[in-house]
Image 1 (cartoon, rainbow, N blue to C red):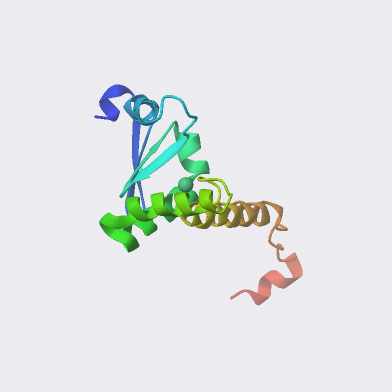
Image 2 (tube, rainbow, N blue to C red; image 1 turned 135 degrees about the vertical axis):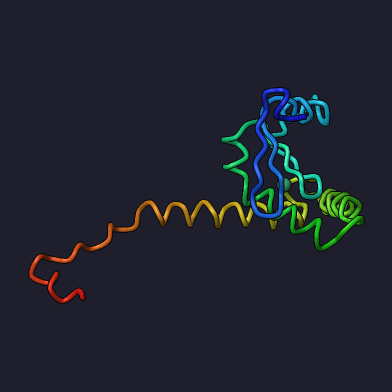
Length: 134
Ligand SMILES: [Zn+2]
């Protein structure tokens, strides 16, 4: 259905990532007042577009693992965590324990990418050492 509406669908790990087309329209239907970039429903990740799906992959895949761990009670546990966060004076989204874990994974992924791009290029063997490589 997503591909038929101009969307993209790709499998990453054990999740299906749908973006653009009908996927972005579904995001709007889920919350027409908010600015949802992506949402995870079990093993399906809906993202606004492919770039967003890639940028939020580690975050959303953390939610996939949370769904796997908690099963059908995950949505209730998620809402309970939001309620507890609000009761404690925090933010329902940012202070939710499931979101905190997902944001931690996202930060770790960004830091790993930054290290990978700043890593020095591999040392090329000098011609006099090429004979040592047999
Ligand atoms: Zn999240």
